[in-house]
Image 1 (cartoon, rainbow, N blue to C red):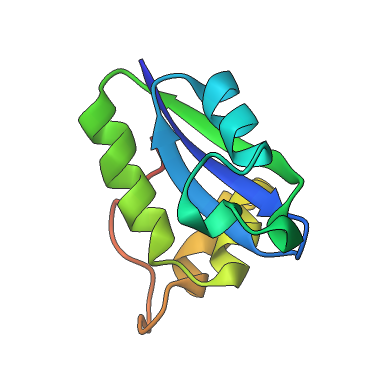
Image 2: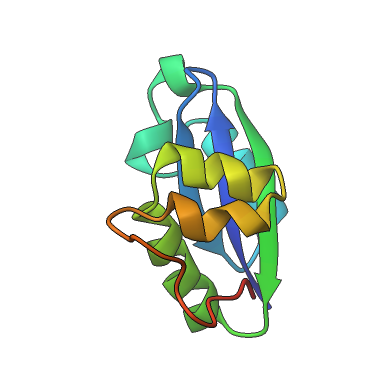
Length: 103
C-alpha cells in the first residue's frame, strides 16, 4: 500500500508527496527531516489536509507528480472534495477532459 498526500505548511503553501508509511512521513516533515521544501522553520508545523491510498507505490508516485502540476485552486478543490470543479480548474483546457477520474 502507498499514499499520495498533501500537507498544508505554516506559511499557507502546499506540499505534495507520496509514501508507503503516511504517519511516519508526515512526522518527518513536521520535524524538518522530510523533503527540502518542508525543512525551513517558516514552513513548519505542517498539517495533513488530504490523502488517498493506492495498491502500488508507482501509482501513488504517478498521482503525486500529476497533482504537483496543478494550480493552487485545483489543489484546494481536491482538498475540499469539490471533484466536479477539477476539470474546469485545469490549466490550459477549454473544456473538461473525457473520462478523467480520481483514483
